[in-house]
Length: 333
Length: 244
Image (cartoon, rainbow over the protein chains, first blue to last red):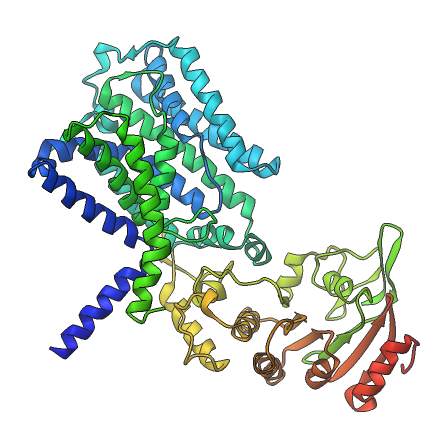
């Protein structure tokens, strides 16, 4: 019995020590709260399915943002890249086939990441400012291409297999994007924690001078991540368009802030060097749940951003104040 | 190093400096601020290129010398201010940039088992295994433990010459002792060192031979038994060339 108690205490201590602690506590607390408040309707399959669509699409973007933030950079243009690539993809569908449109749109996403990397790393400018510029530029291009109108998917392509696989299909009532998200999450978590490149991401984010002194090329690491971040944002945009079968000018608006909020709530620090994709994934679930839960509770849509702000602050405070306090009480740190 | 000259703009930082280190020898490099110590070791570690003079390693002249070439030839530097990533574990820091790889099919993963086992052995060797595990974050380690870990990393990378640039600045006496012990152990391993410090007592303690620089000129060079600490201090104060 004494042994069991010790094991249980150690497990609790290990859990509190995790950087994902705040996000996991947040998910459990908000799920319980929303379930109680809606009389259990929050846990119904159709509500969970609608949350998971957002989790899948935002989550894919968050993976790129999280990797970049661990390397001590940030990309505020991901929301506009998400929208612009979606708009570009639908526009190309009128000219070329689905596969080629996907390929060209993804190529453009990679080019956006390449430009972000070029201006930040070679221009020695702040990623915050450069990507803020990108946010306005790509949103402006969305308006230019769509003329401010909704663009719909060509009817003859709606049943296409490729469209289905890339965001259109549902599997057991759940949109396929959540499966892509889980797949990307596993792959990139392995890359981050189990490969040389992942080790270099932490090193570059934690102490760039030390990383350089050990023969690591910080520019190559960061540039790769800028490209990856835009690629994932663009991919998420295409998945969303394939699910909605239309695109509008405001697609992806505010998603850059949601992606940063998901990362921060999930334990990733803006100063770089620490964090995990699993934490960011929990942060994504938290941010995505709020939107659906508020709609279900009949709250006006504008409460959503307010709630995300509250959750962001609470998540950070749990990680920076409550976690160390609990660790001290438990005799950890 | 033979007749090394280095300019920064119109300022001549090194004036025909001759400097050598034998296999396994511990050399102390001392001198006041602006004496040229840092410039000299940066040339030796491939960070700077000399304007005149020749650099030989194992009797071979090095014409296209660079930081990566220096590392390749076993010349590694332990800096005081940086060299470890605080938010990473001891094991990950120890192998940073030269991580062991395990292949699974087409994929290459970090060999974490090897990293942990090797780190465990190294922590035991440098005498800090009771407080630190391979998973301990460097941020939780003391200054002396960090310096010892950096020295251990240089040994792990098969260093033949370790340049220690002010390794005990800001450390307590007990922590400095730990670092000095780690440096002395390098002698048993046959690894040469260049120890740079403002603390002459400390340099004297760990060195076989001492080289005194002043305003870019070697003003003194002694075997340890040829001069006392006080004589060396007087030499630095006077700035006149003596000895060989």
